[in-house]
Length: 365
Image (cartoon, rainbow, N blue to C red; front, side):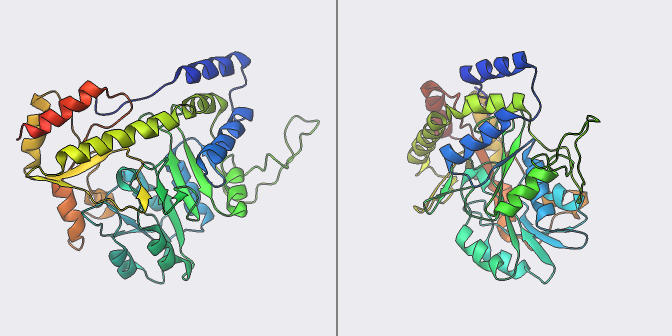
């Protein structure tokens, strides 16, 4: 049994092979088709396909105007990439606390951290469970603060009837190898505003407006770059893999929800385990199944001895020297950091695997 799983559908293999045979594998019609399917099938707002979830976060910061000495608020419960992109713009990461019963940003802590220097807030949907987006956006909108959702875990998640990716000004997704669907490696930035989408499309390829730059007799497009741009675009080979995997996403989403519900039913009354809270107004993407446990290392060793892998996936990132070291003003984060661990949940698990996980947990530690 593996903790993570990379799903590659037969359709992905066929589409990738077809793309390779055309020899046209840079950004082209398949990227546009992938973006169109993300919008039409999943309800994502103006998705711009990119080469990673990290570049999606970075582009959002750039478009939001984040620069040197600005402050960007984020939780420490995330992957280090969320903080690194802030440092890349020489802005200051400001860590707010989380709710230890969800792993998500605490809105009271967020409100207390906002200053005149705050330019953006980056809520992270831990494990795919949506943050309190209405409250977060209400805090930010009147102050002109951009909300940039880190939804690397949250493809297919919903908040109060709306898909994650169609709520805040920016939402960044990851299509890295072990995410819900993969493009090999890749990401996407969703934008509520059409002008933000246009800016993202221009910046993703060296700030050259490919849609409006004309070829010349000299063999190079006629263009005038007027902002900083990057090589952040997705290519057609990656998009082909993504298109094939998107066909399976409804089955993947349903299976993950089924596994999560089974776990919650079986682990609800086990001493030493605390299930994370779930509200009825949102639907998790179920990329992780995180629990809080007493004597975590004993738990991990016991399950490993029964053939079941576990992982914290990510510990608090503020402990890294680049961010200044762990803070003492994040009590919810401290609790979560000491107790959280995740169990296997992915499309590759069989019914027998799930029974094995349940039996291993119920056998104690």
